[in-house]
Image 1 (cartoon, helix red, strand yellow):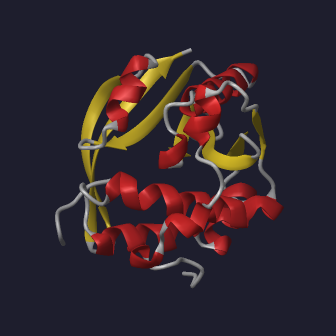
Image 2 (cartoon, helix red, strand yellow):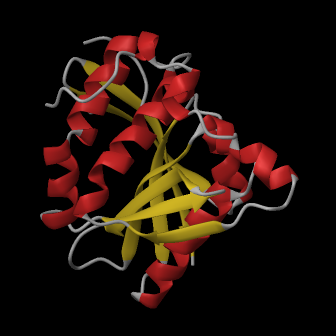
Length: 201
């Protein structure tokens, strides 16, 4: 196995072909600076799967290209973000998805749910914001929305995994998450080199 960090559909655009035309609207940061952009966070449904796929494609390559190989990025996108995989996460695994819309377009998403049926611990499975929308406070609003929903459900704690080389580690630390464990998880021909982080609610 190749040692890297922390994925069947044909919808993904090869990353070499993803350019400025993929998201041609005005960058979110411009709207944020002008203080004219409205952020709306809402639950996602099965009808939103294509939106989630596009957001994942836009966020994953710039997030992970300096951390893991292109082969692992593509593998994980196909594994976790095919239409069938997202539907299973929503319907079978009970993951809740949130979509963030900012300045009139979709800019980020989160996914979370109970660690198991008997647990009072929620797992934050995914939280991504498009690079051109980062800095507008969307990550903060998404993670607080997840935590608020977890509290309403009676959860006492939120946990997550983050790649040990991912700059998002600093984001989670600022929001009160602390490293609980260091793990190396095999995934197909690759490895996920993660921290497990937790935050008491």
